Length: 265
Ligand code: IPD
Ligand code: CA
Image (cartoon, rainbow, N blue to C red):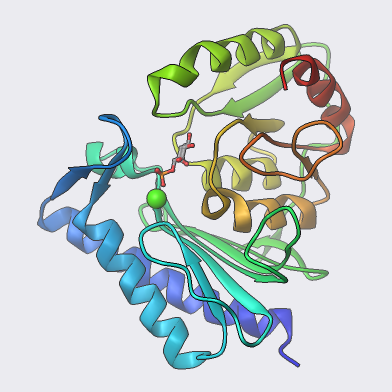
């Protein structure tokens, strides 16, 4: 049996090397292509970094599955699947905004966030050098500091992170969601990388995060960080986090934000 901490150590080593490779490629120049819509971009580095992560994982754990943003999925023979976003926050990466991350999670079960259990996860920002790490039952950590979500939110409301999809067709409903949240928010943050939004909830840098339309690799590691930091994470009413919705917050605020979002979901 593999311990979550062994998977975490492997993810940490690979994320650091992958992030440093991405940062090096960024200094050398950018090669950008368009994905689903004009605003949705991918760089040559996204693909190269995913290939690097995949090759390292295959070498160390050939029976594990793989589920990444930039290449075809591989089914697991061991019960463990790696869920990988080589560069989360690609638009920040392209513009030179220092808020992008490598996100790597090891999950048990099928490659579907509705059913899997994340057992280890890292979110690494190579620009700040911050490596957020969590293993199931082992807590969430940033360097030697154990992370915890904010306990409660005062009269000013919560500091709430969120995101907007690339597809212009989603902007109107996204703004309707924001309209529901503003009355309970002291302010909003749009950091530009879902994995860092979730790491921010885990470390108490924001009180909550919600977003509709994310992909499994955007939130697989970050959800575990929040849970291990004492937070709550969910999706559409009664559901688990997924494309329909991801909501993450401390226990003192989760119910309020979930309640205001529910009528729009
Ligand atoms: C995106 C970022 C962004 C979020 C989008 C994601 P990408 O990931 O996490 O913050 O709003 O939903 O798709 O494309 O940079 O890997
Ligand atoms: Ca990405």
